Image (cartoon, rainbow, N blue to C red; front, top):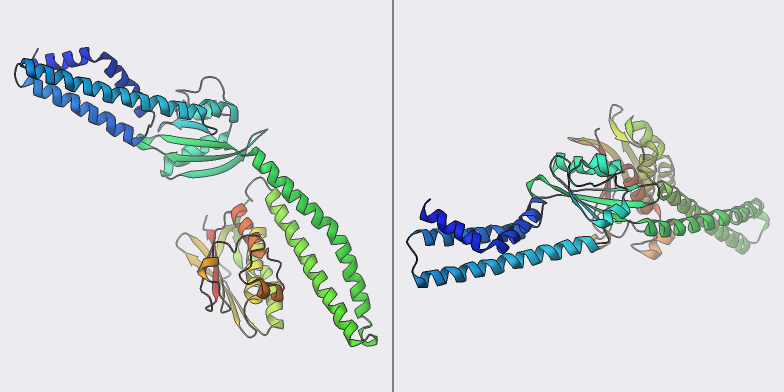
Length: 416
């Protein structure tokens, strides 16, 4: 046995507590622990090797023995500190309100925290077993498989028999995957209560508004027998009753979209028939405002879409384009094939939208210019409907616009 080997054995024997600590830290490392902890463990290991190499060069003197002991003591402190960090990390995970699951590159569970078992039903002791065997939620297995296949983070909402959940899966070093699952049941119930209330109120108010519009139309049938001032007042009533009706219809439409707990089904469809049906109301509006309206779509173009969602999205975008484009302006709708699908552009040469508003225009009732929007007659819900359909059908929407230079809204459709 060489002197180098004897010195290393002596160091290890004299530092049993530290080596145990190193083992605990190494277990955290093997479970996909933080990269800084891995670096720290490696640094401590290098320190041990350096001490052993220096000691092996010659038989140490008393001074060297003392220095070596001090160095070993310092390493013990560092390893104990790493152990304390590991214990703290373990306590944080155990007390986390989120369910945490770590799986290896074969889909086997490395570790879970106690919260996970309360959020998602588990079958027996999970560690060492495949996720699909233990977690009673196929969506978690699918998330992990997708992260392992793509190396990209993936988010998904799903539901068990009793809970609404949101899962976030991220890749870790050494091929591991960490999944964080949040129970959002309370939040979803509050949102459903709010939307149900709005929907119920909207439904109840539609009846009196319809009655008002009916009476107004009856009065206007004899408009030539009424004083001019009275006719103007009645037409104002009619205009505002129509706006109320449109508002209630849009609120109910939003409620129907939000009430769906799952994504809308999609399939391969020819785009031209969907677009022709969608732009009908916008073409009528454009005709009354003497605007030029162009629809360009090759009959052969197909894409994977939900027809209801795409029709509603393009209809609202086209109506908005006509609404915010001056008379004798131009609205163009083009279906443009791309490398990975099809892009539908709804373009106008109207007023445009300043960049500071781009993020917020998708909110309900948000108006870039309140006075101008009310004068145009919009409900303030058109783009909110577009956003909700985009999320439900996985048809992302983007915007390019500058104030005074018109706008282009683009709907992106996958090829398959």
